Structures are given as C-alpha cells and as structure tokens.
Length: 281
Ligand SMILES: C[S@@+](CC[C@H](N)C(=O)[O-])C[C@H]1O[C@@H](n2cnc3c(N)ncnc32)[C@H](O)[C@@H]1O
Image 1 (tube, protein in one colour):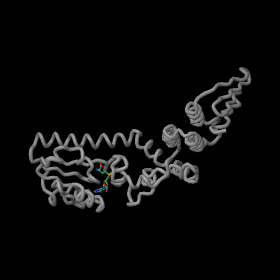
Image 2 (tube, helix red, strand yellow):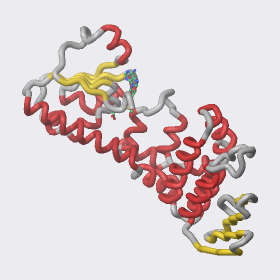
Image 3 (cartoon, protein in one colour):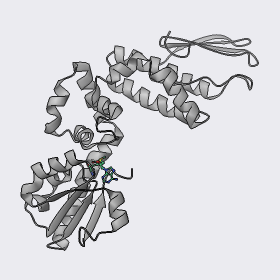
Image 4 (cartoon, protein in one colour):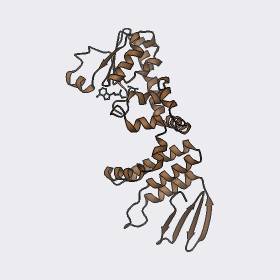
C-alpha cells in the first residue's frame, strides 16, 4: 500500500481504498466499485481528499507522507522525472494547505528530514549544493553554473551515482532552471542591442555571479562597449569573472548592493545600463 491507504466518511457511508493502481469504492447503498488509475491520478486524488478533512473535529493530516511515499515508489520504478514532478507538486500543495509557516516548517522537520528520499535527492550534486549552501548563502554562482550546465562544474557532477546524475538532469529541465537559462540569453541579447544603439555604452552588472551572459553576448566577446563593471559580494565569484573575462576588459569588483545603496554610484561612475539578475527573485 503506497498512497493514502484508506479514506472513510461515515456520514456519507463512503469508503475509498487505494490498492496499488486500483481504487476500490464502497458505498452503503451503491455497493462496491473498482477502477484502475495511474499513480499520478491516485496520488492527486489522495492529496485532494486530504485537503478536505473528514469531519470538523479531526485535525487536518499532513499531506507530506503520501507525497514522499509516492515519490519513493516512482523513483524505485525508475521514473525519476515523474518522481520529481510528484515531489514538487505534492510539497507545493502541502505548503499551501499548511495552516501557518511554523506548521509547515514543523511538518518538514517531522516528515521530510528523516525520510530516506532526502538522501536520495542529495545524490544530485545540484540539489546537494542548494541544500548545504557551502558559501553560507542561497544561490551562489557555482549553483547557477549547474543550471547553466557550464562545463566548469563537470568534475563536481562526476563524483556522484548514476542515479544522482539522472536526478540532476531531471531537475535541471524543470521550469525554474529553464527560466534562468532563458534569462541569461535574454540578458546577452539586451547587452548586444544596447551596444548597437549606443557605441561605447557603460554598463554595470550588480550581483554578477560568474557573469555567464558574457559567453552569449557578441558585443562583450568583440569588446564593443565603453566600460563594463561586474560587482559581487562574493570574492570567489569576482575572482572567477576576473579569470574568465578579465581579458575582455571587464572590471570585476568586490562590493555589496548595500554599500552601493548607501554611497550611491560615486565610487563607480555613470552608467547607461545597470542590471541585476538573480538578486531580488
Ligand atoms: C543567484 S546568483 C546570480 C548571479 C548572476 N547574476 C546570474 O544571473 O547568473 C546571486 C548573486 O548575488 C550575489 N549577491 C547576493 N547578495 C548580494 C549583495 N547584497 N550585494 C552584492 N552581491 C550579492 C551573490 O554573491 C551571487 O553571486
């Protein structure tokens, strides 16, 4: 038994039992019915039922255990993309149904942290880095390089299991990483358009990370700009920009947005275009 095992509403005389891919419905007057459904349908149904507590007196039960159990089943069957989809959708529903942020955190501590699926998901070096935050903050530029599928992370990706590599690839095709990759190319297009409109344009990239849009911009590759300052609080990212793109004339500078807001642009100069990607989202 994998999903919500049993649902009963005495007032309606209704019982639902989930048995592998089958749903068995028993009603006091209608009798018994049985149907076969996909795991996804049964999972969605079981979660939906939990969204509506059976009686006003019963405490709503956490939606997380069913999600984790279905996720584990799908992963064991080798369907990692469906497993991830189920995990994301189930946790999103569970979070929306949680009565308060504290209740959500308590639910996660109780159900997710001790669950074996957490260890499985950490076989993906991308997920592991998002979770452990080795530089002390979320969304560092190395994590972004996983999303960009940048070759610089190849050795990090090699030190894992085949399942970890598949999980990583499945995770990187989900909507958020796709949006980040698209954003990088849109930025490069914007830089190219600007440098056509305004020769010698002066540009400031705030929270530049590893400045990977530089690899998609012909204006940067051909040095068709007046000045390009790349600013980030993380000295390791600044060193990486200097190493990778310093030869293009890009000035990599350590600094925080807070200081910039406090002191204005006086330390940096005037710019035609200032942008920040991945700082406020
Ligand atoms: C998600 S990464 C985005 C990097 C890059 N812009 C991109 O789109 O790939 C966020 C970056 O913001 C930087 N950052 C975070 N807070 C900052 C702050 N207060 N001042 C400057 N940089 C900051 C981090 O060091 C990190 O490199």
